[in-house]
Structures are given as C-alpha cells and as structure tokens.
Amino acid sequence: MNTLDYILIAGSTLVGIPMTVVAAEVALAFLPHRPVHTSDSNTLNRPTLAVLIPAHNEELQIAHTVASLRTQLHPHDRILVVADNCSDHTATFAREAGADVLERHHQTERGKGFALAAGMAQLQSNPPQFVLLVDADTTLSEGSITALLSAAARFSAPVQAVYVLSAPAQPSTKDRISAFAFAFKNHVRALGAESLGIPCLLRGTGMAFPWHILSQANLATGNIVEDMQLGIDLALAQHPPRLCAAARVTGGLPTQAAAATTQRTRWEHGHIQTITHNVPRLLGHAISRFRPSLLGLALDLAVPPLALLVVLWALVTMTTAICAWLHFASSVPLLIMLGLGSLLILSILAGWLRFAQHILPFSTLLKVPFYILWKIPLYMAFILKRQRAWVRTAR
Image (cartoon, rainbow, N blue to C red; front, side, top):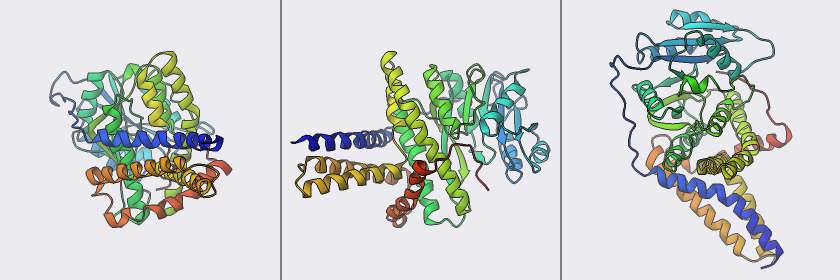
C-alpha cells in the first residue's frame, strides 16, 4: 500500500466510526429492557412536582397541552407556563386551562433557554422536589409523568422520555421519512445507548429533573439546541441523563414546507455545531477523569444526522472507487467503505423492521435516497450560511 492508501483508510475510519456506533446501538436496541419500577400513583409520599412549559405564541396548542397534563397530575402538583415574548393569547388560554402563567418580555434575551431560566426563578420561592419540562406543542402519553417521576427519583438524575414525531393526517413522503429518522435516533438508537450505559442526550421536552440538579444548571442561553447542550453539561457535571423508555412524548411535524425546513435547519445545524464544540471536550474529560461513559457519549454525539452520514459515506466511497479505478490506490479502502455501507443499510433496515414499520411503509422506505438529496442544500447552508440564532418554528 502507498501513502494515498493510508490517507484513504484514515478517511474511511473517520466516517466508519459513527457508522459502527449506529450499528452497535441498533443491535443492542433488540435486547430486552426492564421497565423502571413505578410507584403507586395514589401514594401520599409522592414527591412534589412542577411542570414548566415555555411557550412563544402557542395559543392554538397551549390549552390542549395543559389539559392533557392535568389528567396525570396530583392536586398538589403545579403547571407553570412561561408566555415568552408572546403577541397572541397564549397567556390567557393557559390561565383558562388551569395553569399558572408568567408573562415575560425582553428585547434581546429571546429563546427557550431564557424562558426556562425565568420559570425556574419563579419557582424558586417554593421549589418542588422535581421539575418536568414540556414543550407547548407536545403531548405525554398516559402514565408517562408517573414513569418519569419514578425514574428521576430512583436514579436521582435527569430522565428523558422517548420523543417521537407524528406525521400530519395526509403525510407527504418527506413527512414519513422525517418521522422515521426522528424515531430511529430518539427511540432505536437511544435504547441501544442506554444498554451501553451511555448518558441520554436530552431532546427538549418530556424531561424530568430533581430540583437540586436543574436549579444549578445554566439555562439562560440562546443556544439553538439548548436541550442537547444541557444534557452534555449535566453529564460533565456527573449528573448524566437517563432514558425512560416507559414514557413517551409526541410532537407534530410542521404542516408547511417552509416551517419544516426551518425546523430541520435549526436542529441539524445545531447538532453539527454541538458535535464540533463538544466531542473534543467530552473526549478530554473521559481520558483525564477516566470516565468511560463520557467516551460513549462522545461517540454517540459524534454520529451526525443520518442523511448527512450517508452523504459522507457516498463521497468517501466515490473517492476510493475513483482512486482504485485510476490505480492511484489499492482496492482496500473501497472494500472497507462498501462493507461499512452494507453494515449501515442492514442496521437501518433492522431498526425499521423492529420499531418503525407503522411509521414508514416499505414503499416509502425505497424513496429515502430522494429525501437525502433534498437535504444536501441544508448541509451546504451550514458552510455557507450557518444558522446561529434560535428561531421558533412556525405552526
């Protein structure tokens, strides 16, 4: 082998590591997972709980969200809606639904992180034992609050519900594939990561925290993926979040194409930025403090969005194929990439067969390559016009 062979093998390894992580997580997702024991919901010893809901112009959703939560709460539990820089009737509808409301207006400090910080400050005078964070446009399935509270109490740690997205009544191909990609990351891979003892990345909603942990966290930021960053910071502070597979929180995909693009841009640009900023940091702490769980979190975080991973694989594979064809390099790098590609495809198919056939029909699964092509401009925008500020997705 020549020097180019070694360069191509090094590139193949960089792409192959996240592909191998995905395969390992999917394989371990098939293992049986013991549910966290949940205490009797009628017990008098249940810890005190406050549900904190940041909301910006959510008048169409907020009453339903509050009402659905109240069916799972005890009389001494609280719901606090932070109506953040709202120009609609969010605050009024939230009060009418039975929630306490904090109205907040600020010209420059805008975004979910600042709203959460304001809500925590409001709760400070009479703090609960646990805080549940829920987005205004998501719904917790029956029994999820009890499951989250029990898990947070048992582990004395932050816990994250399985977060999935529901497609519209008449979903497009993009809607179905987006919902599948979301479930593949937040459900399938998360189950495997939990089996490996890897801290769970926080998803932004359906998250329960002991008060003493969340009250010490830095929430007042304009980070466009503040939830992901919060989970990393808590893991570094020796409060690694856990997955609560018995709880499920469901959001809805945007119904407008422009809104879907805005949402995807924020999530994926934020994810890529978080990878570049935090993977070296996590690796450094894992080595210096001998914390294998942080190494696992670094590897899990280093997996880019699935479509981007496929694009990177395709680029490296084409490069190795051209070099082999022109006899600039041996066929070894190409064979490595073809093997890794086969492993990734088998992992995606296995995850779909076991967990997501109800989300994505097989006929739509065959259209995934066109979905990947649709997302390439989004990734190009990360280089040319990166999104750096938090932007609310239009409903």
